[in-house]
Length: 79
Image (tube, rainbow, N blue to C red; front, side, top):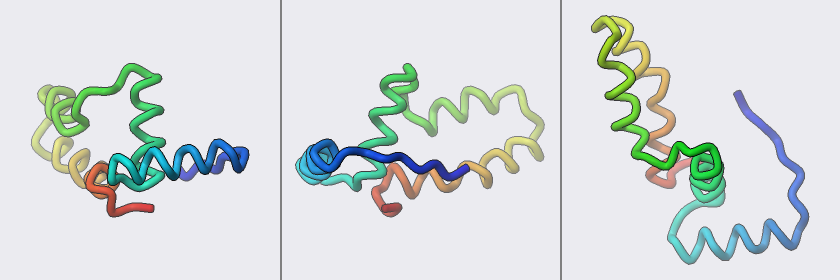
């Protein structure tokens, strides 16, 4: 579900600079910060594989398709 945030210009500029320094998009940078704050800093793919271990093959495939968007975010394709 999309989410909209109002970020002060000064903080947005800080995010832009930090993201550029790490060669990431702003979205990737912010998502990683959120994951870190929530204690989800592990590799998303590994977390999904661990979680999917108890799912049926069909459920695992549905989960794989539903979370495909995260690959784009981690690769910096999504801005």
